[in-house]
Length: 306
Image (cartoon, rainbow, N blue to C red; front, side):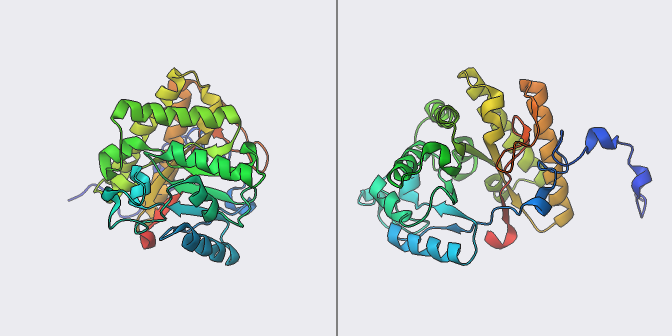
């Protein structure tokens, strides 16, 4: 017979609300990174999209934005993810299938033709070739008259989870991690409103991890990225607020809510205790509050998307 009670209430919890929960927008961010959370501003809504040619996906992007979508999320085909041109023998049968085919900066220019890059944020699910696609995006922005500081978005750039759960890596792990760090350094140096990495647990959850394991594996990877960036000379308080995370959202609502709240709090404490990151209050409407990354961006893949 289990010793559990049939019903639990507030009196059963022995924690300190101020220490464990706090207020929204304040350390340890259990209740969220913004003081008013989504009552003050709704989350960005973007559908993962990309197929065929740049022109075909551009038409899809325009349709989604016209329908009220507030950001873009680019799916690239496997040859683009693996650094192959569409006419390479290894790309046969895969061009434009799992996403849009991008072989050159001209392709990326066609992909974003007529889309105001200074007003729309773009999430790019790209890892091994993230530095290349980000460089292309910067060039397209310049051709649109948009400065680097005006560009807003995210590159996934999480190569460790590719070795663990997906497999779209190109280089050995050390040069791969150096590229990840270089992207973080570039974004920080240019003052871009871009998240240079989206540390991803979703793929490991889909590969069989539990909710707790998903957070554990993701944070193990995230801490390694932060260690590498600090070792490369980056100030944790400059770049860590731009470290974002990507988790799954399965159908057990209460487990998922608890996971997200626990993850925000745990990451904030890890950053403060391990890297002496300073808590940062809300920095204006477009700012990223957090503690050297109090999980300021938290995209999730709900059940319907998988």
